[in-house]
Amino acid sequence: MVYRPSRFSFLPIVVKNLLIINGLLFFATVVFQQMGIDLIHELGLFFPYSEYFRPYQLVTHMFMHGNFEHLLFNMLALWMFGSPMENYWGPQRFLTYYFATGLGAALLHMGVNAFQYHALTEAGALSGGFSANALGQLLYSPVVGASGAIFGLLLAYGMTFPNQEIYVYFLLPIKAKYFVIIYGVLELVLGITKSNSAVAHFAHLGGMLFGFLLIRYWRKNAFRF
Image (tube, rainbow, N blue to C red; front, side):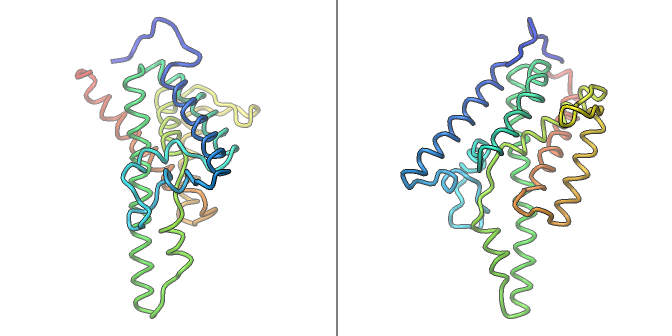
């Protein structure tokens, strides 16, 4: 069942509040940093094998960003793809989808990290040493950002409005369905080749994967909504 809003909202309620929360937490991160308090260390998502991991980080990491450019890019994408999806779905389903894809992104990211961790420790045991840098990256580098949920929204937009044109860099028009496919393949290639390891490519893919599965489930069971 499709939600029918009384009118199209340029900035629907859930998107607006997500923008506000992300903005406030980024501001708080900067302010607290001047006081010697690292909110990213507290609220970013650590690998579960790390002593710094806390269960609540599965949610809080989605509202933390490493720098202003990271925040700006994610919030622009949240508004661009989130607003039409919230208008289409309604606030309740949109919020469910947002958190489901964000959590799904975190789970896939941690699953890939777990595989890498066991591969590294096994290799270290066989060779008599550990790859300290690689293990340190896994254990002590928190993941932050709404990117997993954002990529889930991108996938939803492409599935819902496949022929709607997206203007890349505000110049090059491309249909949403092709944009999603290109971005998904690019993230997979970058994740496998470990290009720019500072970016959690498999978290992006996780958001898209869980978004695809959830949308398929909703469509198959549309009569229940």
